Image: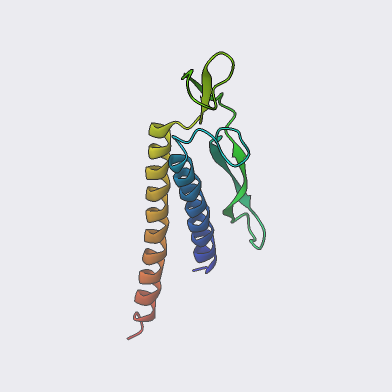
Length: 134
């Protein structure tokens, strides 16, 4: 049995942790009107790729390549008396899809749990292998 399974699962745990952090940031900023840059918060998305570094025989883990801005248009809300309203009375609200982010959070959490189970199963199998000769 190869120890690379631990590295592969660990890379998945790190990737899913970052995915949950980005989703939590999106949810936390879902109702904000402006950020420090003066623009409305733009939702982020995590981009994954295969991590071949350090692995042989086409066995690889996963890594976060980048965190990108969601290209979905901002939500325009008509609030003519708001201090940040434009000439037509609209303010820009973040393009965060709250339901989509909740689904993303649940999916990342389940993936994280599955990788923890993989590590625990491999650990259990290794311990049982050690007791075969007794």
